[in-house]
Image (tube, rainbow, N blue to C red; front, side):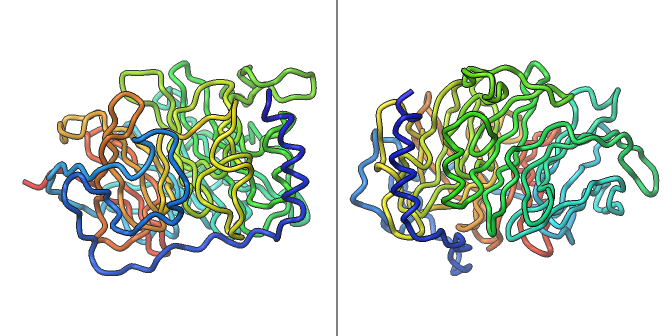
Length: 417
C-alpha cells in the first residue's frame, strides 16, 4: 500500500519539526450565535486556510439549512464532573462516566454514588474515564463495557476496554471486572489524543476507536499494524480479535479494520444502512467526518486539511493517492466530540440527519446528508455557551446531550409544545 512506503519519508521530516503544543480550548463564549441567511455557511468567520481547495464541492462550509425546530431543553442531571459518555438502561435509568474516574447511574434527576469496582484510571489533561456502553443482551447478562486511560507503569498509559457485571442496590458495584482489550504500546504523553468511543456492530461485536496520542515521535505507529495507535479496531465481547483486512504478517494485529485517525471521538451507524461513520478531531482547521470502509487508510498525518499547531503543513498536503478523503471537514474547527444519527418520531424533519457535538465552538451541529454528501448544516444550542461532549438518541426518541465542564449536565431535547 502506498501509504506504508511514504510514511518513512514523512517521519524523517517530522522528527526535525518542533514539538506539538496543546490544542487550544477554542474561543471563549461570546454573544449568542446569529444564524446566517439560508444558503450561506453556518460559520460567519472566514476559513482559516482559504488556500486549501476541497476535493469536491460539498466537502466543507455547507449552506445553512434551518429546520425551524423550537426546542425544549430539560436538564436530566447536573453536578457531573466532566462527563464523557452515557448509555440507556432498559428500566429507564442512564449510566454515565465522569472523566476523573467515576461511573454513575441516573434515575429520574438523581445521581447514584460512584459505582464500585472500577479499576484505577490515569487522568490527564482532557482524558481519563472515557466511554460506556451496555451489552446488547444487558437485560439478561447485566454486562457493561467502558473505555478508560489505564496507567501502565511510570508515566506511560494507553486506552483499555473493561467489562463488568452491574450489581444494583443503594451502593451499586461492578462484579467480575476484567480488562478485555488493551491498546498497545503504552506511551508517555502530556496532552494526548486517546479516542475511546465504542459502538456495538449489528453482529454483537464491538468497535473501538483509538487515537494517535498527540506526540510527533509516536506518529510512526499510525501506519504500521503491530499496534493500536490511530486505528479503528473490532473485537468480540471477550476481547478476542475480529479479523479485519489490514494485517498481512504474523506480527500485525488482526483486529485492525482502518487506520490514519488522529482523535476519533464520534462513531455511529447510519439508520437503515450498514454504513459506519466517524468524527475525528483534526489539527487547526481540519476536523473531519468520515464514512469508514474496511481496509482503508484515512490519511493522518500523511495528509489532512488545516495546519499543524506549529503552523506547518500537514504531511504532504490535502490529498495523496491511496488515502481517503473525509466526507466533510470543518474550517474553522468545531472539535467534534460525539456523533449520532436521528431516526425517531419526535423530530420527523430530522430523520436521517447527523448530529455532532462541538467542544470548541460550543454547539450541536446538525448535518443534512444526501447520499454520502453533506448538503446542509445548522447550529443548535449555541445559546448555552457550553462545551458539548456527547450526543445520543434515547429510547423515547429525544436527543440527549452531555455538557463538558466541572458542573456538567445531561440534557434532554424535545420539541417545544
